[in-house]
Length: 528
Image (cartoon, rainbow, N blue to C red; front, top):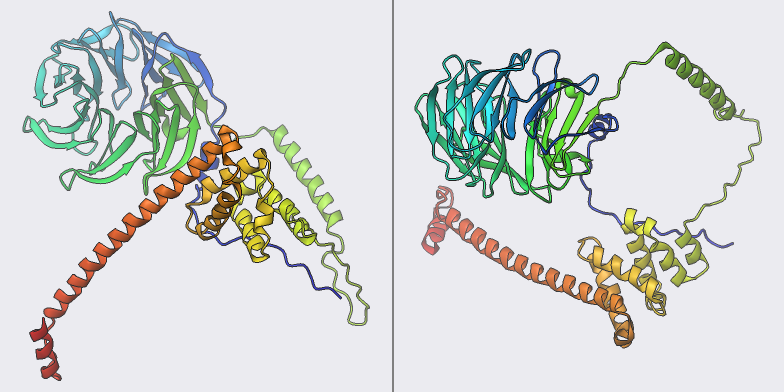
């Protein structure tokens, strides 16, 4: 009687971090976007903190208030002589402030249309306008490299800060201290100004032109976005860098928090909005958009996500409603009853327990083999390797493909399985080697396979197509780069061992002698 066929077991791999399933489901709860064409690039989006929770869209020479329920314009502020920038609401939602290309700052009542105040003093376009936490003052930042704090009642400048050497394009205030103002500039710096001392109290260098700044409600942690990275700074430690997040491929242009400050959203010119967990700054979700993103905002309880793009498009996503009508509930109940009845039919006899006197005849289930195991059983080794190099197998479970190669090496048939391949099959094999040969758990096996492939096809490489030759050159470059990295790591380990050895000797030399063995202790000290 023949023994049972032993199938190929996948190689064990190192565990990888996975996105939280709850986060994926939560952010996928946003419906298909509603897209609206604006009059210009949507540079800023801001939600009204109070009812009716309109959101202000700054585009071209106007600021429009959208109703999130109807997705229509509820009011338009168009008393701008040039391009408007940086519209934002006061914390009670009754007033709105916006900058302008003509160097002025305008204050509006949400219920009216005519500006209540016009603040004059800047000499260049004003891109940043925010309300201070005391609700009586406004701060603005301009391309004239200055930051001004205005009194709403008198329209006068209370404080003027100078310190930046380039355009100021971002700013925010501290929620815990009404005297602190944070600004980000194209001179690569983020500065914190204190209105009590009229001077800069903190300055950090981001390393790239700063496009956006945020501060946690506690006021102890500051975030800056510029270039393709987001940096996290500890304010209480004097601007210590805590983390650098680089998940965007192009410039990060905007950031915002969700309603409970547990998630950070960032948008960039690479057309992605990325959602981070603020505990470890890992990406938990990614949302794609058709155009470069300039602004992002999210409503209270994360019900509406609004994104403004450089191609004049405004995207609005609403969360799916959890409530259901009585008809839908009745249909679901009827469907669940049908499923329970069907399940009860299929489960009949599953829990049956035979009596001790019954004769039980066991049903033999036919063993289902994978395709490569099926070919192994027939000793068709080349076809087994082809089955393991199918894109579905090697992309999702590369450890299975490597295990098949290991089995071929064990059977001493790997050379025969690799030989005689046409251009298409050879390219698939080379792509797999280039992709996974540097992975630690696969490297010992794949290096042997790569050596055999080079040995088999080196004589005919001159007659091969340019695509095949390029793949061999790519494999050569990858191996050279990995070998260089291994050499550098070995040098680093040698240096670390030297430092640790020296540290251990120094620690031993300072150990207090044991009174029980004074002679041995004295000898050790003398040797040191």
